[in-house]
Image (tube, rainbow, N blue to C red; front, side):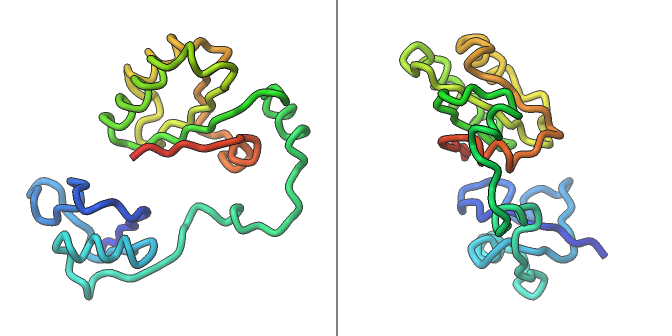
Length: 168
């Protein structure tokens, strides 16, 4: 018996939700869906409703942590982020076309972005990123854009950022 975890409520046009369309892509026997929207998308795509169970997020307990946060200035010093910088955390998804579109736009807008600093978290399934990411970092310059190590604490960077972009 296999169990999958559907961790995001993808839109109805997201091709991997087309259940049964790829004979070489076996599906799990049961699916845990992160919320009703994800379960609805799976049902709409043809996944059997009696094989779907709802669950909550599996990777985000710190977002609901009630402990007082580390002061931002202290956190930024610890992470090597200038305190005065306006920081955007970019959390990449796995779809190459989304990466290319986002970073193509960022590279083109580079000179107009001013002193914005981009902290980029690649998708765990694509840790090296792709050519569009490398081109954007080259265009923006390493002092304005950097890729975070995969073992870095994403929640520290969320707390340190002024804004977050999640393409897709």
